[in-house]
Length: 280
Image 1 (cartoon, helix red, strand yellow):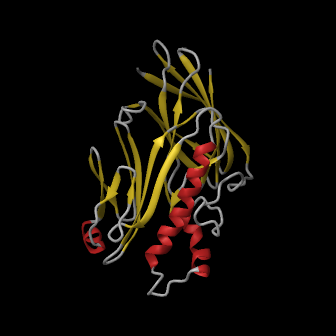
Image 2 (cartoon, rainbow, N blue to C red):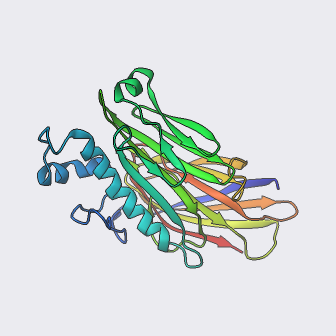
Image 3 (tube, rainbow, N blue to C red):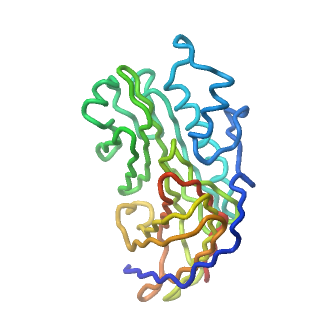
């Protein structure tokens, strides 16, 4: 199936915005406030659990902040769709000891000094491995596996890794707000299943986004489960700070079938998906 897209319009709705409206609190770390970017949780973590070099050490703040943000995202992703909610699993922690594992992903358990000297950590999957650069992030899409990882901190012994896996995609229409979780400024994408209700040569996606600053949004159309590595189309567009609406036409011959939509905000931004509607 060959797909093509065309941007029809970008309409700035309102320059004012409320990023936290309708978002979920972490079910585990309920005492932490709702945030899109985990870097903004350092202050409450330092106030409630200051680093003492014995029981509380630095990597714990990085991991706890990411766990709070990504757990909240997982709660939102479950209920964001009116027809079929999705499921994501995540974990952040010291990848050396006690180790980090999510679903069928597991971090290579090696010392932080090795990770720091070579410049990346390694994650093992059923299909091989992928590397995550120190201070960076990596998206891994292959067959039926959609995964993402960030490596925000590395020490001489320990290193902090965040793993995220989409185990079931939420299906459009999306009516509940869902954040794009950010690991200390490294923003993860969102994935949604797009299934037009009737066979047609064109479908329209109406996308609402709230952003804390002007940025460039990246979009990709991927194959469905089993062929996530197959990129059908890709594009990017700019939005301003505040609430924006984007209208896209997707065309295919002889009709537009089901596909996976990837929406990826820019690093260093705080972004929330307000809605995603598909016609027909």
